[in-house]
Image 1 (cartoon, rainbow, N blue to C red):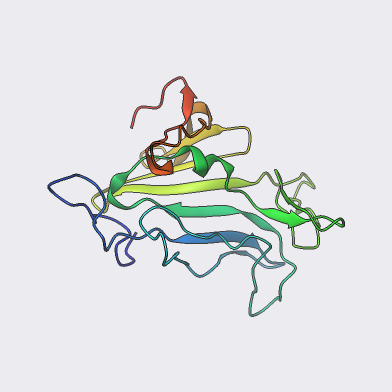
Image 2: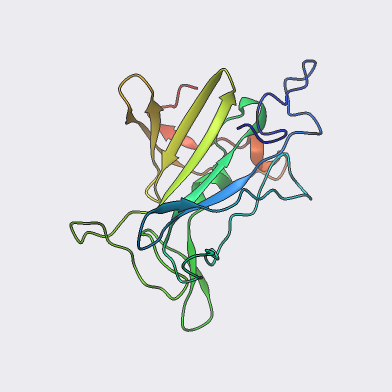
Length: 187
């Protein structure tokens, strides 16, 4: 949230992101030694409303390319909420047939699934940092649409709702199309 335009980039007249606002994407991945985050990337064509997560894997300078990606994190400048398209941003791998597919569990570009210390598959997650620098809000969700918010007081993720994307009506941009959540999310 300290990167240029990542937070507090609001136009005071409209309440919308200013032209210098920018979304950044990172991938969270696992090496044989630790957890790591890729370099933050921004989409220079639509930087106020989208970023390009590193689909297909990351290139780690110590361990190479075939590392399992756990999920993607991004920010929303100006404290904007999670959008319907956000719910579909998860690691993707290429099948033997050459098709790209979203994965529900951490996977490497070669399709290898990651496991934790108890030999259980590691679920894939998506994360959102939003709000303002003085009052950031952090959310995470899985492919099933279960949304959690970070609670700084208890140092844990609290379940908020189960959300599904809404279809775009074509008249509004993807940022304004909020998901359908039960119970309704209070922002």
